Image 1: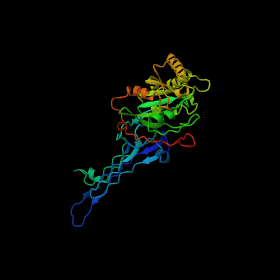
Image 2 (image 1 turned 180 degrees about the vertical axis):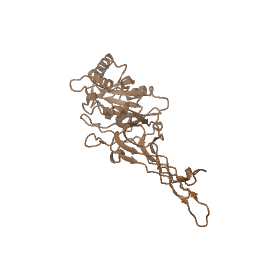
Image 3 (image 1 turned 135 degrees about the horizontal axis):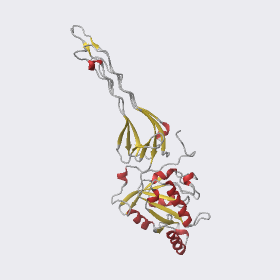
Image 4 (image 1 turned 180 degrees about the horizontal axis):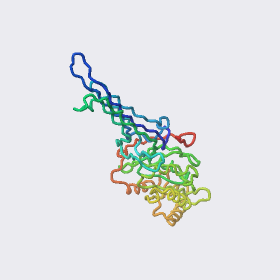
Length: 356
């Protein structure tokens, strides 16, 4: 399955059916009169959050959604049939934005949540409804209300309890594979993760969803690397795990690496800078205990409240880190309450795709 977290689509509800102009004419029936029925109601555009979806890839190939119009009224006082609603199924965590992306029009956070987004037009009146004591043979009717239409953006923010951040090659993919049921790609090069990954962590009888996003580099807020495009997927997280590579990268020591990521989170905003943070000094299997203790002191001097020494490869220190994570989660946190079936997302080839 390819991953797509943004899509632009066109929506149009159904117009109302026109009313009919008709008069009763039957053999051997002495009196006639108007008997034109009303038109039927047009179909609504309805969004529904469903279980089992975690990408907007379907909207890459289908971008126009038009509900049917109501049927016209007929003689013998027959009302036209109303058109069925057009239900658009979206993943839990989807937001519907205005065309300029300035306004959130709908936000789907629970399975089964439904929103009537555009209402279909009401059917027009037939001439029978105009009959009165002073207007015995009306010939007027209504054409039915017009449809509503608009362009909107869909933006997916995956629902997860815990977010995983860090520089490229900090060991995030190895870590999420070690603690959850995810099967993320692992490689000895930067940006092995190109799209967000979700995994379900089961620890001490509790379950929670862990989200791994592509690595951040300095200048990500300005578009460097993959940029901060995928940070929206951790906006709803309760706590963030910041993995720091103990071996360093290039000329950066762990304290400098932590500073880079923290500054990018602050530059992105949206409340990420205020979320609780657990700093994890990763890959301690590649260094001795004395060096790990020294780097932990440097990280705390740089602003970390507490530092967990862990190794995604060997599992060392992970239990203590997971215990700390549970303290930030409600007593009952389960994938069942999220409504997401967590599955691997195949990385899309060919770079980022834009629907326009």
